[in-house]
Every structure is written in structure tokens, then in C-alpha cells.
Length: 304
Ligand code: CP
Ligand code: NVA
Image (cartoon, rainbow, N blue to C red; front, side, top):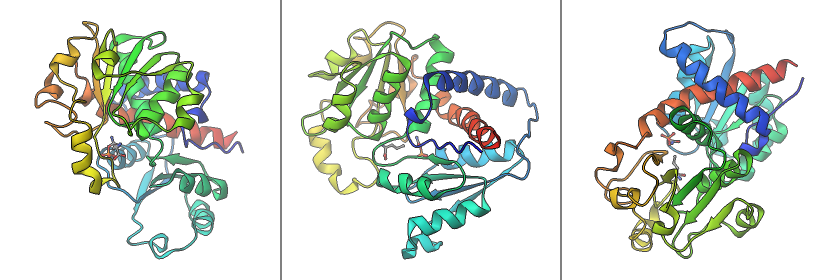
């Protein structure tokens, strides 16, 4: 059995990632045609959420049902995880009963530790450092609207956060250029930046990043777990809003994405989600199809 996990985007080779994105679009078409495809009847996913979620929970739960399987929502509030049962023990027990596990948590070391002790595939549903499932959906959405992303320019405007880190990995694997505009003190961690200097550039202003971009992406100013910094961040990020004026600096066919939830009037203007080049609803829907492709890949690998 080839046990594979998906903790960061780099757990897939370039070939595997590209195949998975093709498959995600196929699964989207099948689902939208109403085709019934249930290869995983009886398979059960455990979903551990230590942070809130709308898209991630619904897409994994719906995806498992559509595949003929099911998903169990596990909140630390109601499990022994919340009362301090060690990750190592929890991982061994949970993975004996389930076929695949998804975890959304704080420290990235927690998903790494869980995976190290798990006997089934583990998927990172967001940590403080990475959000690789969102990148699957973003890449699928770009390709569906514009074709290959190789050689294109992507602008990241805002916090050097988990999404930004996953974009850096995507730039490396998929061969695009990533321009990052973040306020001082909120740039990505040096360890990530230095590793990706061949495809990532820190620029001075959002305008510099947006110039000639093929895709502009942003995210909330304060991520989950940073709620107390909200006011401080509002000041630091005041000039980092993605709006119609910023979009006008990019290529005419530049797309706009946001992983959502969005804060109108903060990281985006009130009308940015309605911009003709905004593809955020497709992006959100593709969480379902891209993650179904991921689950199919990981469960099929486990059979080899
Ligand atoms: N984009 C995203 O992961 O959304 P949720 O927090 O709603 O899962
Ligand atoms: N950076 C955000 C993404 C939410 C999907 C957070 O971590 O809260």
C-alpha cells in the first residue's frame, strides 16, 4: 500500500498535479450532467476542524456523499482531542476506523504529526502555514477560464499568509511568476521566500504587483486565529485593497480570485466580487470538484 498524504502542494509531483487538475474538470462536468459516479461506496472520511469553515466542510462532505461514501465531522469540542489526548494516539485510533482524514488546524506541525502516525491518507484542510486544497481549486479555475498558467504573472496583494505560501509553491510547480505586495511586517516568512526566489518577487506596492498581471489574488487581512490583531492590521493594510482601479493596471483579461470569506470595504472594494473578471463563485464551486479528484487520487494510491 502506497500511503500518500496531501499536507502541502508539493506532496504532488508536477505531473500528478496537472493530471489531478484535468480530472477535477472532468468530475465537474460529470457532476453537472447529473452522472452518478460512486467508486467509494462504504468509504468514510473523518474531518477534524479546529477552525471554522463553510466551503471546506461542505465540499468534502458533499464530495464523499457523491462518491458513495460518507464523512464524519469531528470537532475538538466534542472529541478527546479537545481534552488533550495526544495527536499520536488520536491519529492511530482514528485512522484504524476511517479510510481518509482531513484536518483544519493551527500549527502545521500538528498535521505533520498526525500524518506521521496515521495509517490512512491525511489531507491538510488549512493550517497557519498552508492552504493547498484552495490552490487546487484556484488552479483548476484559472485553467478552465484561460488555459495553461505556465509563464503567466500572478499578483498576490496583502498578507504573506497561508494562502500566499501555497501560491509560492504553486508558482514553483506550475511555472508561473508570483509578484507579492505585502505591507512591511506582513511579508511571507523568510524561509519560504528564499526557497522560491526563482519564481517569487517581493514588490513595493500593490500597483507594482498588479501591472501586467494575468491573475490578481487577495485574502483577508486578519486570518483565523488573528482576530485580536484586526484593528492593527486595518491600519497596516489600508493601501492594500483590490479594487477596480487596481484591476485596470493588469492585463485586460486578468482574472480576480479570493478564497472567501471576503470582507467588502477591507481587502476588496464593495463591488469587486461583481467585477466582470472575478471568478470567485466558480473558484468556490471548484473546491468540490478539485477535492474529489484529490480524494480519488489518494484512495486509489492506497490500493496500489
Ligand atoms: N476558502 C475556504 O477555505 O473557506 P472556508 O473557511 O469556508 O472553508
Ligand atoms: N487566510 C485565511 C484563509 C481562510 C480560508 C485564514 O487562514 O483564515
